[in-house]
Length: 169
Image (cartoon, rainbow, N blue to C red; front, top):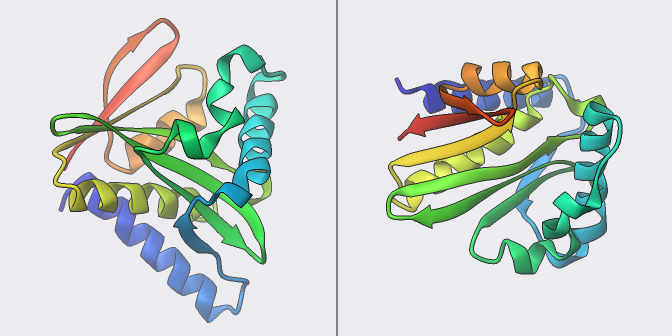
């Protein structure tokens, strides 16, 4: 069983457990333009929470998500009308795609929502016939490094304060 299968199976089990306990379920769906403000706010809040501040010079893609990620597969997790997590699979040519803009609302972390988003993106990569998925995170973001490693991604390199991960499908 590949690493991404482990991530997918964990997400399925967590959703099943939530349904048994009657906890409000969440839905993973494609981003739509009316999500723009909520998604931008969620991502910026997550960055500010981790880094203490954000620099808008590095977040222009969030000004028009639908246009910037038109070639990608951008998904959100929604619970009771609230966007609680995001992620996007962006084709890079050939057999490769990159996952970007993974973000989960602080109160929703460690509840399986991020794993479910990641599993949906990996499944889309498989449907698209891709062979490799990469992603990067900040080398000081230890929770993210642990999360991606637990989902089967292999650390390939560290450079310029970033960590590059790869998953072979």
